Length: 79
Image (cartoon, rainbow, N blue to C red; front, side):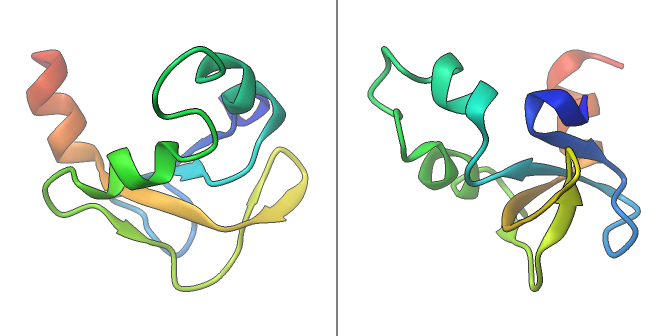
């Protein structure tokens, strides 16, 4: 997942999923959407989502990220 700009259960947020503010793959995913370059704004609107206090190592680089609670994703995905 880290190659996609997503880190499950980062050390500082064991109950969260960190989604990088800046990652090559995410730039491509959102390239043709209204969220191109600003996907963090959409993600921060999710219930209990927030920006990371510090950079998180994602895909070998220190990156700021939006942290989304795993419980929110489990609810939305029907787990």
